[in-house]
Length: 318
Image: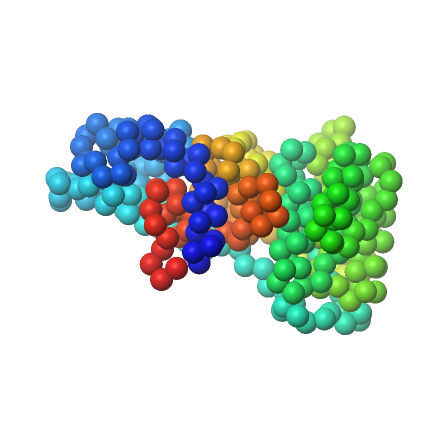
């Protein structure tokens, strides 16, 4: 797990630095006192961990401090990481599907993953990075450029597909996105692909139009395969905090989400937003975006995340 943990530690560096700055390096070896507990509370709020999670972390650290007035910052960090790991129990999404190296017969439907989210969330790049990750694992993948309402989205996905040597089904800007999904599903099935990744529109003139467009894609896919899309993942910008929770509520109500991908955590000091999203919606978190490269899309691991946030080493046995 070392490689994975390093990605988490590096990707969450801004959050860790912000907490360290507000607590004056508490977890570097300072002894706990009343002032440092106040500093930690402010740091956790600022990092978007929310009232409930911050309260739980502080309560356990204060209880340990009452028992041991010599409690060190490093020990407090261990307690905080343990609380976060417990809060995130069950949050790790695991993608079940065709195993590495197994060719899907042309008579078998591809597993469809619809990537959903507003423009700017990193949805299109996540589609490409996910395709690359699945390909690295030995799976066969087709991408569908169904964000046809934003010219840059189609070109962006084409650029990524060329760079990563991924199969892409696309049409012109302004084309019917459901028709592209229809063509892509047929191509993926005919070619025996394991997965079809559908990049959907992120913005139309009104929210109602966008949700109807997404519903249309779902209906077209369901005509081919009543189970499709097997996965509907919301891609959210991790720096948005509470706004990302509201996004998830809207899309979940209209589309029926099955999971989350949280992006751009390397560029924010508000890495605690993940916890609030999980507590509010109980949607599994499949991947985190921890950088700009293809390999920076990493499967979510609660223990690695929790320990990285508090500046600790990788989990025991990792």
